Amino acid sequence: MSTDTLIIGDGLIGMAVGWALAEAGQTVTVLGQSEMTGSLAAAGMLAPSFEAQHPRAAPGLADLLYESLTLWSGFHDRLVKASGLTLDYRREGIIALADRQAPPPVAGPPIAVPEGFATLGPACLIADEGQVDPRRVHGALATALAKAGGQRRGGRVEALDLEAGAALLSDGSRVSAARFVIAAGVGSAALLAGDLPKLTSVRGRAVLVEWPGFPTRHVVRTADLYFCPKADGRLYVGATEEPAMAEEGALARLWERAVALLPDLEGRRILARFDGHRPALATGTPLIGLHGDDPRLIVAYGHDRNGILLTPVTVERVLRLIGGLPRFIGLESPLE
Image 1 (cartoon, rainbow, N blue to C red):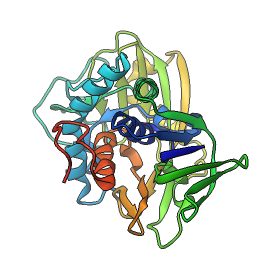
Image 2: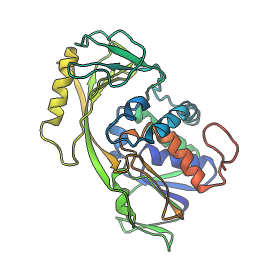
Image 3: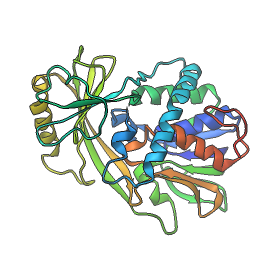
Image 4: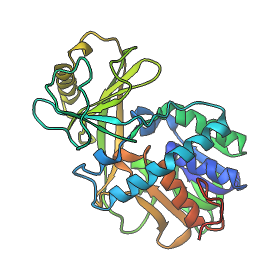
């Protein structure tokens, strides 16, 4: 088969880039193994003020995080219109909460501690931040991609042959393309040659519980825990940070801390336990650009904890790298 652009990776970023290119009239194939994507294990928080302070974050990451947050409403509106689906997108603010060991992780106007949390406070509200449901976003992107004429198929790339303009798949088949976009998360670097920043897989595990009527609609975060309630009565509790090889007892310790802070968690029905891998670059910021100045090969990986938040700005930057395409979110004039 042949296509204008082959996108390797069908997480949120790969799917979103594919949709944007299909909307622009290009032939696109998105290739991946969606059951492996970290997007489907994530809670979906849109929290630049928290993430900019993470120890792995580079000093310049904050600007990228906030830029992408400003694009999220436009991205949401366009995706809802294109897919006809809802995303549980909310920007009512995030509550930063002290726990017994640490003050609130970020500062903001004071707010009452939500009912049920075993802390004397303080708590503060970080306005305009919020959340989206990654599974709904992924499903909406699949629908929008198909409606725009894009193709999606399962498969794993063994090697790229840029001179031949083809990707060799593990089943022995080939996909020909004029351009390749690498958005395969922790698997991206294995497809690329040359001197690359070190890519580490940081394991993250979380628990999904059933809790209709959670005491607040807000995401609640401490220095090392989050409680992310969804509109359908599910609550994400997370998340660990471990080496790629599981750290024995890490999830149990996280759960113990969560129950100590929110005792009513005890006995709640557990719906799922998630186990994902964050693609963390040593540079502390994602790599979005041409690989080796070759216009046929674009990379978009290393988003670490922020793949969902950074999806809109990554789409815009990939379109800019390709050139000659209209801005996807916001202004409709061609990108310079």
